[in-house]
Amino acid sequence: MVGWAIALHGGAGDIPIDLPDERRIPREIALRHCLDIGVSALKSGKSPLDVTELVVRELENHPDFNAGKGSVLTTEGTVEMEASIMDGKTKRCGAVSGLTTVVNPISLARLVMEKTPHIYLAFDAAEAFARANGVETVESSHFITPENIARLKQAKEFNRVQLDYTAPTPKVPENCGDSQIGTVGCVAVDSAGNLASATSTGGYVNKMVGRIGDTPVIGAGTYANHLCAVSATGKGEEIIRGTVARDVAALMEFKGLSLTEAAAYAVDQSGPRGTCGLVAVSANGEVAMPFNTTGMFRACATEDGYTEIAIWPKN
Amino acid sequence: MGRWAIAVHGGAGIDPNLPAERQEQAKQLLTHCLNLGIAALSSNVSAIDVVELVVKELETDPLFNSGRGSALTEKGTVEMEASIMDGTKRRCGAVSGITTVKNPISLARLVMDKSPHSYLAFSGAEDFARKQGVEIVDNEYFVTEDNVGMLKLAKEANSILFDYRIPPVGCAEAAATDSPIVMNGLPISIYAPETVGCVVVDKEGRCAAGTSTGGLMNKMMGRIGDSPLIGAGTYASELCGVSCTGEGEAIIRATLARDVSAVMEYKGLGLQEAVDYVIKHRLDEGFAGLIAVSNKGEVVCGFNSNGMFRGCATEDGYMEVAMWE
Image 1 (spheres, rainbow over the protein chains, first blue to last red):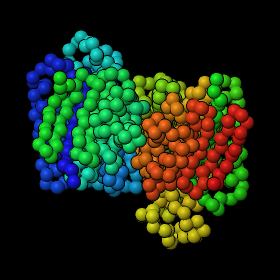
Image 2: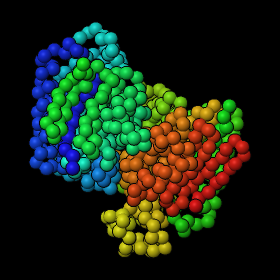
Image 3: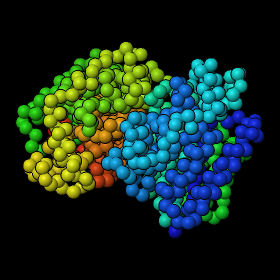
Image 4: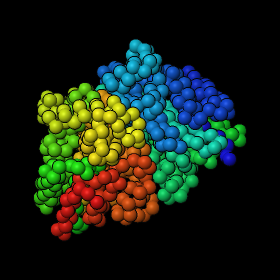
């Protein structure tokens, strides 16, 4: 019997070290709040699948992260959300893409896993499935925040696909551009070694309508088996070709690496610097949160009392 | 200078009572596609180009479940998906929810080459297709009489089968009693082996892979399977190219295509061993098959399903088209 562990993220990216307090503090508070919720749930014996869904719902509802409310906008100024969830014990999974009115995409992904013979539903049909199952939906405008309208405007001005943590200033920050974008995710393991992973996002600022990233692709943004659970964030296109989440588990299984080594290796190998981060837990209750971007909004806790809430690398 | 190799498939899980005529047609099409690929490889066409042209041919022919001849959704329409991957830099492109683009594999290639993204779907993908000027047709073009009939049978079977592990009873019994094999919830006589695919390694040792499908007969609208998911249905790296087919859920959970390369990279297995390993150990309770080539010019097929339509050829003259063990 090992202890439980939980890790969550609010996205990896080019988060400027001089992020103003009014943008940093609310996010730190949110990370702590979500961590507390997750830890309470684990302590009260909820399954990792329930815990990860619960925490991601909370992150989706928070407008400062790129998922659910607060999702970044497509090139047409709309919201298209996607999510996936995986249960390590059974390797069952569920995924959704192209959601525009579903309040909690991660819960819809779970429903796909549990209520259909399929794994992945998208766009109009996913929305119809939500309604047919009485899932909470709202007007699309609910998800759109003034910050994201400004980000889209800025991205269009630069006419490039952009990360979402640049402050809305007119100058082009050095690293602004084609790399990272936020996502939210959570991984958890209980004391019996059961693992689960959940990831959710609005995608890429100024993305083409219909663009799908790594988040709903099992093996790319989300993966869980009997060894570990992983949720990745960053530039979707790199994470897809790098099959990042799957690779962490594959390195542990096929190369005998530890969680920490496997997670670091997977991030390093995924693509150019500045494109990837992940959170992972192992069946043994270990946690790893590597990233090759400037920062990653993250938090973790383990049963032996360790907790961490951070944005930038710890030096 | 390496040696080229190529493999094609038309789906895993074949009705043991498939009429001889259909078996012959399948063999002929696979042979034709192999020959197309061989001719291209002999004139130094690159692996990625060969994959695209061979899969296009498979999509265009109505025999297999992709492009024209795709399985139908529950509403009787066609929704296609495809993905392609170039092992050299692990570049990839994928599309889903395609309803009017004649060759989904070519659209996937355009996503890879001409868009800033890796995966486009539904109306966004269709818009992109129009902007790129690809050939557009009506959805009816893809629908064949055969499949309209199959859809009807599938609906009858599905109204009885809830858990696909329970043997079928009732109306579909006549179809099922001779073939109690079930795949993806349907008796195998009704099940349309999903997917076509092609994997190639060219003389430069570059590997590529491509997969295309209409998906599961009677599927929910908006259902995405393994074929457009990089790592599940398709994968290519410096070491190998892989295309999978069969029960989509099993392939996704197993990240089957990626795992072939991963065991080669991380365990140092050769291609044959890697394919044997993933088929044996990764498909818990699921039925699927795959074709794979390595940068050394090897070609391997593996499956745990009841047969797989496949063909392979290598530069030294070896060529085989088969369906059963």
